[in-house]
Image (cartoon, rainbow, N blue to C red; front, top):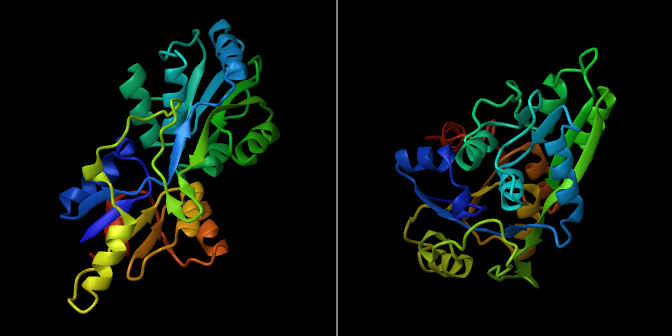
Length: 269
C-alpha cells in the first residue's frame, strides 16, 4: 500500500519511519511551503529581547518555528532561568537536531495548543509572567488567548508564513529564497496528475487505493483547491485539519494521534 503525506520530505520523522517499517511505501505531496516573513524586523527585535532575559518562557509550537528561529541565527542559547516548552515530540526532535537542547517541557495528555493551555503552569509568585510565542503568521489566536487567561503576558510574533503551492487548481513547485526547508528529491514526491492517470488505468485491476495523510489545515485547504482523485482515501492529523476538510466538503477520518500505530489502526492493519 502507498501512503503520501501532505508535507515536505525534510519534515519526516518517527511517523514515516513507522509506516515504512510496517511495509507501506511512503511518499510526500507538499502543498504548502514555509518561509521566513518578508519583514523579519519584529522577529529580530524579539530574539534580542529573549537574549536579554525579558521572557520567562519560550514556547515553540512546531518544528518550522524552530527552523525559522535557527535560520535567524538562534542557536538555542537562552539566559539562565528561561524555560523552553514545545508542543510535542516532533518539535522537540527538531529542537534537539538544530540546537542540541533536549528534554524541554511539553504537555503530556494532548500535544496541541489546547494541551499547552491545559497543562501550562500559572506564573509562580515572583516570576515575571512573560512568554515569547513565535508562531506561523496564520496561527489561530487560541493559544495566545488561553495563556493570557492563565495570567501570562504573551508576545506573539510571526516567525514564518505558509505559502500555498496550489494556483488555479494546479500544483506549482516553490522557489522562494526564504524557504525554510531544502528542495525535495523528486523521487520522494507523489505526483497527483500521474496518480490520477494510474488509478484510471488500473480501475479494474484491483490495485490498492492510495492513502493521503493530510497533515495541517493549510494543507487541507490547498488539497481542496487542487482536487482529490478517485480512490484516494484521506486521513487527517488533528481535529482542526479534519474540520477544514469537512468545511470544504471532503470527508476524512481523523487519527486519534499522529503515529504510525494510529494510521495502521485507521486502515485496519
